[in-house]
Image 1 (cartoon, rainbow, N blue to C red):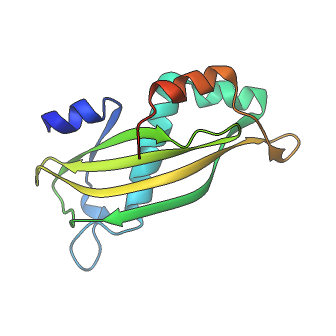
Image 2 (cartoon, helix red, strand yellow):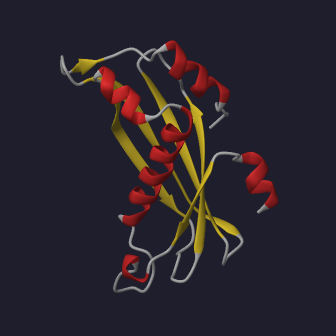
Length: 143
């Protein structure tokens, strides 16, 4: 856990719920995308609140999501979702997720999302603001 904490200083803690398991008695694959979403929203709310972006009518939308399942997770467990950033472009960036299981003392799942800035008024892509770019560059890591 110590190495994970050093590598991913931006983390969200999530308690696995009994109802997230499926008939095969492990967390269902779809649930991991919710874990990624929780970590993504926590990241933004910590550094660049989404409500501020939405007041301007511009915010991130997900254009691509992926997950790699390395080990099954079961209830009870506490997970830590580490977030890092890469591939920053003028209108998009990639968020990477690493899920660490306290019960297994290992990374169980990795994933990524491509976030594209979107202007909800004009329904077109938008540029990243200088403020958001600064936050993203501060948390950028090699993928």
